[in-house]
Amino acid sequence: MMKIKKLGLLPLIIISIIVGIALGNVLPLGVVRVFTTFNALFSQFLGFMVPLIIVGLVTPAIADVGKGAKRLLLITVLLAYCDTVLSGLLSYSVGSWLFPSLINTQDTFEQVKSATAIEPYFTINIPALFDIMSGLVFSFIAGLCITSQRLNNLYGVFSDLSKVIDAVIRNVIIPILPLYIFGIFLNMTYSGEVYHMVLVFAKIIVVIFALHIIILLYQFSIAG
Image (tube, rainbow, N blue to C red):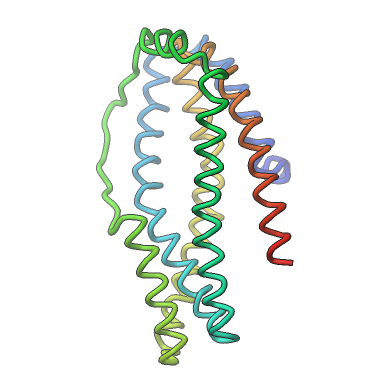
C-alpha cells in the first residue's frame, strides 16, 4: 500500500487509464455497471464538494492577503480577473483554431453516437449547497469583511473549514480519483468509445499542456 502511495497521482492515473482500457474488453457487463454506478455517485460527491472547496480555501486566503496590505489584495483581485479573461480568450481562440482539425468532428461524433451507453444500477442526487459563482462571490465578501472588520472568530471558523476541506481532498478525493478515472475508461472501452476517443484525447492533452505552460510562464513573470 505504501508503494502505491509513493507512485504519485499522475502515474496512478496513467496506470488507471491503461488498466481500464485493458479490462474493458474482458470484464462482464455486470462488473462494468458496478464501476459505472460508483462513478455516478462520485461525480455527485465532487459536484457537492467543489463550491465548498472554493469557500473553504479562498476565504481564508483572501483574509490572509488582506491582513498584510489591502492594496495588494485589490491588485491581486484585478490581476486574477484579468488573467481569467485572458486565459479564457486564449483557450477559446486556440480551441476554435486547432480543435476542429484535430478532432475530425463529423467522423468522431458519428462513431461515438453509435456506441452503447452503460447505465448505472442506481444514482443518488447530491445537490450542491450553492453554485460555484455564488461560492466565489461569497468568499470575496467574507474574506474582505474578515480583514476590514477584524472578525477573528469568523476567521477561525473559515480556517477550521479549510482544514476540513484539506482533509477531504487528501484522504478522499485524491485517493479515489484514480479509481474514478479507471471507471471512466472501463466504461468507454466496454461501450466501444475508447478507440475513437483516445487519439483525440492525446492530441487535445498536448495542446492543453502547452497552454498551461504558456499561462504559467506569464503568471509567474507578473508575480515575480
